[in-house]
Image (cartoon, rainbow, N blue to C red; front, side, top):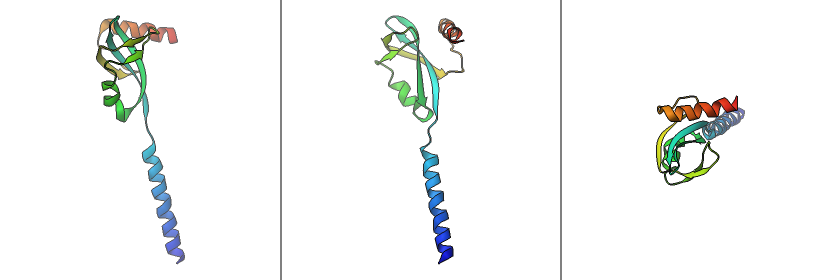
Length: 104
């Protein structure tokens, strides 16, 4: 009886720990090169890495905060990358460098 109680307790604890381990989400900062009515811009987000595709898809036709301190309508999403990467477009890369230089 005592062994069954110990085994049941161990099993219960392992189930509880696996439930909490699965609940953990990884939020990662992303930056997106977007096209707006005012031209190209950058929007910053923090997304769960499992939801990146859905979040990126939801940007189209949404008003998002941009690095120019405006909420602009997204006409097109060109590129979304993690904060540590560089944009492909030279102009947008320059905008991003100016933003990060201001943070320093």
